[in-house]
Figure 1 (cartoon, rainbow, N blue to C red):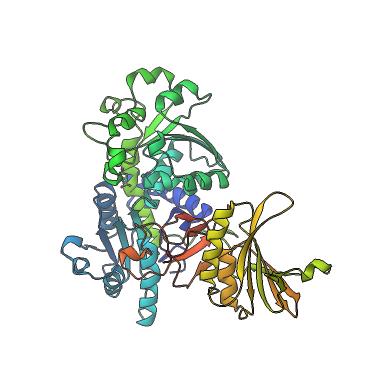
Figure 2: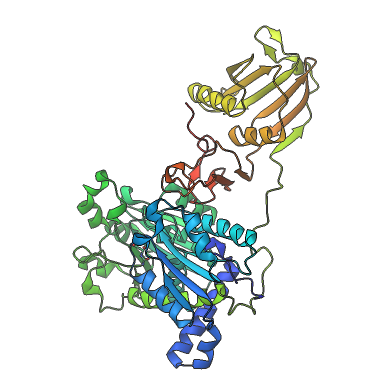
Length: 531
Ligand code: NCD
């Protein structure tokens, strides 16, 4: 197994690099052509063909298309295909997911296809089961494929969506213009597009949804960071009447009633109307427009009405059929059958930023201001002063945050205090004084940088600033008991009882994203609630 794809997990679409995804699409095209031509020799070159190789389907949430296309794709490979029936498994006896899947991964070399309401589940399992395999000296590593996790991502749907777009634009990666219509708030298939569409050099996305169903800000932010041109419309009607250049590719998603709260459910008829296609819209469409949908659509309230099935707008039926082809190829890659001819591209996977410094020593100023830090009326002789806290916030917010910093760094005991001051620029900032405080260790500094980025830390000795540091958000923060993802649906949220330690990475726009569910947090939000 020399291919870079073998035993790889696919938790989010970005687990495959852009160039790996482009390679994937060429392979899907090859397979689809071979299926049409009934070319057994080519088809065989995709087949894992190993009766000891296991493909496990574990669907903890309803599914038809994803589950059945994966089952058929797995059977194509002539391997052992199994299904864990969750309603009769020990998950119902309070067993953790890690214990269940560790045990299954001990049987044979396996790919697990998992759908769940719990976000980040396959990421956690891929980490846990890899460790399990190592400590039990297993000769293989299990791979996990996320078949949809809550509102988070649906990477294999993303692959088949993009393959279908590509077929319709001549397998051309140079640009794409797509309208996303429907429940952009709950729909994981559209969330995966925020990174998924990066395979195209230029991306224009029109988001069409009423406010209640609009895409969460963090995904819009991600799209912009990825260089996409993003426009927002509240209904199809508004889009067709005001957009200068409506897209030719329209991707619809179903209102996900099962994930909506009471408040939104009450308005479902009005919301649905804004995202349902009508006959009188037809003349406004551009020549060559095509509609797509991950399906299912509602039998009584479809947002793509059934009278459109027999029109050239119908791209969704071929899209669903492509699902099986894409999944055959994915299993072939992860099963190590194909992929040897892929030439890795430098920068395929981002370089590890873990070593980046987040606390940088600067020269203490030499002027007389250096002596100015005082403990009430007395100058501080020894201790620490954290300055420039939450610069620009309002005084109440700054005070609250200083309480959090003090608690997180264990600075609640002993002498000292907090101030809010106003600089010559009119902006407020906070200062924490701790005369005689214990020296801060490396782990304290990391916590300080995470909870109080963009501050200065002054170490005072003999009444002078002996050392001065500037804090920056650490690229990663983990391994502390008091971290907590605020998303209840996340595998790492204590509410789910899976004992998964929270872990965050910094985003380009200065948030901490949960390493499991991707939820964006500010540096104030990554901590467990304090009493
Ligand atoms: C989607 C899903 O499950 O996220 N369906 C699918 O996988 N084909 C979309 C949906 O449920 O609306």
